[in-house]
Image (cartoon, rainbow, N blue to C red; front, side, top):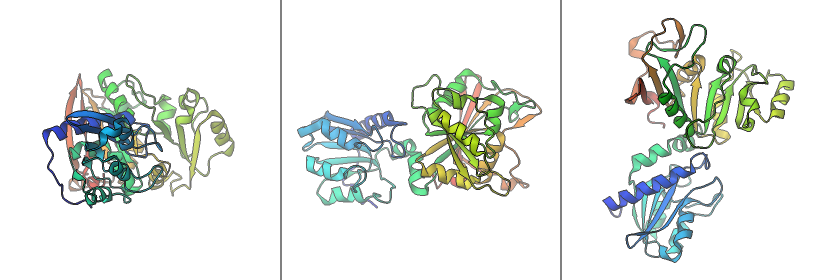
Length: 377
């Protein structure tokens, strides 16, 4: 791990790190499974170079900023949201470029948990006489790259349950009708949540009932991949997710019992089918889902339903975060947001942490994390 800071952070350091964070966000949806990284180079109280990681496999934020700074990087201070890499990957080590440019001081937001880095970059810079200050706005940097941290340390994506429900915990009427439980403002926030993640996941029941598009509306961003959990491959060939302009963003998870003919028809439309050996119930196993999504480079997933998918994700212990949109409505009988978790004693209830409640027009949004996974993500 990195050694102690050489210099404490100043208010100026914090201001420039905020700018680096804003730059990093420009890479959202374009760099995964790499982290979001922004960089600012300052000399004589003037910004001489800026950059961010723009595309997976391309130059890192530090390199882009150094290119813009040119000779002005000599003796400058470099601000970067994530520890510079010190190993050869798809690109060369950023630490070498920083050293060769003559940068005098480096201010870092957070240490890179990647085992190939994990403090080695900071220690290299210090060993070469470069002044280093680390952990500046660390919480903000960690929050921005929470999916990357989970992915790089566990091989699985960060999993957020997004649930829109009535006050009495229903996500639909007893007939399955659910449009719309929450207000337009709540739905806009839900689309913002979509835009911040690599993928959206729903069960086949939601496809059969609602035929959703799972696209972004009223927000800018890169369309997340659409993942359908469909053990028996029941998805209709005329479903929206296979017939809009984005079939290549659709992945269907099925078991090895699926029809080969139907798989071919789906692939002809541009969709992708990934097969798994079924569990004892004939379903795609939960643990296999998240491992596979990690393998194909997905670092964050929003699970949007339905009730069975919510329940199984919680029951299996893989859920990290939750985002509840609660409308002040009562349905009485209907479809529960969460089904039976085999909890028979109140002391066994799943604890929640970092809970925040906000008012949205007529609705409320409640966010937080599942306590039993707090130390993982």
